[in-house]
Image 1: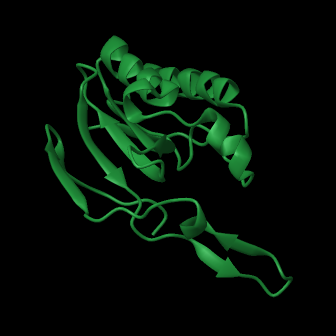
Image 2: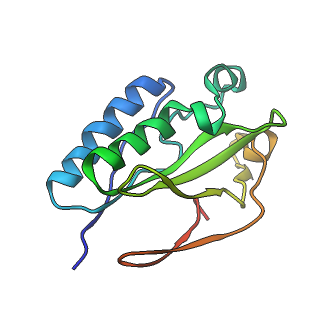
Length: 155
């Protein structure tokens, strides 16, 4: 039997604090026997303020959330799936990107959220992910030692 864990955290606007929470919770899941640990969407930072988001954005290769996910996977010898984090793309746009790291800390696959959350609420509040994020173009499925895994973000 394979033990997997989905960690629940309340990401805010401070990536360093979010990473510290992720680190603690992934370690707890590993200590409980999990060999695959999933973090939530927007693990790195959850903010509606576009200027604040732009200030912390990094390309995938230098993103601190991605680096921490890879390091935890390598150190603990487990799969760590960053549910998603905001990644700066080469064209200056932003991807809501999930990243799966293998037990060696290497990237297994990435998935960019395809279906954006755009809604107008009755109270006048409006959410438009499509105003900030570029949607992904393809689904991802990978074969892992314990089975086939498909990827989606808040579908």
